[in-house]
Length: 178
Image 1 (cartoon, rainbow, N blue to C red):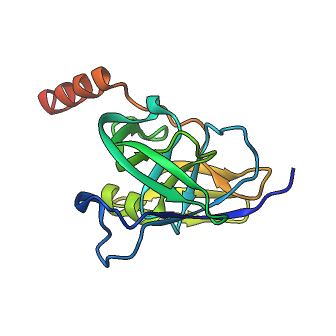
Image 2 (image 1 turned 90 degrees about the vertical axis):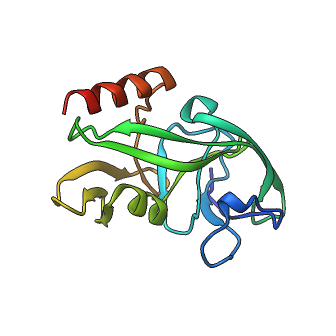
């Protein structure tokens, strides 16, 4: 199957809680013409929001009615927004967050906004020919490792998100045990 680049843009009917700092329309680049949804997560330096197609990847959802437009002009409905938490596979005491994630059931790739993830988690991305790392800005410790997939895109396979119940238990235990 051939790949094509699709530019994503949210419509101008923006919720004020999700406007970007410089008032540009949120954007993302996604490389896919495959109709099969992927469970991997793709770091996207052009995205201003995290985007998923799976409601189980998102916690504490709120209804959100808007659209993202792909490069061919097709609008994809945003059905909810929320956030997700997961633990670094390299450092189990480090919890990472995807804030202001959009649920777009028709999107074929889960996207991580590189700039948003870096800012929200105090991390940086390091890209190499065949893999990429997410590292702590404080310790330089590797927190995530991704690889280049068959389509040539960097990807993090199968991030393990907390369920809403586990997330509140983790938060309670984390703060009580310090």
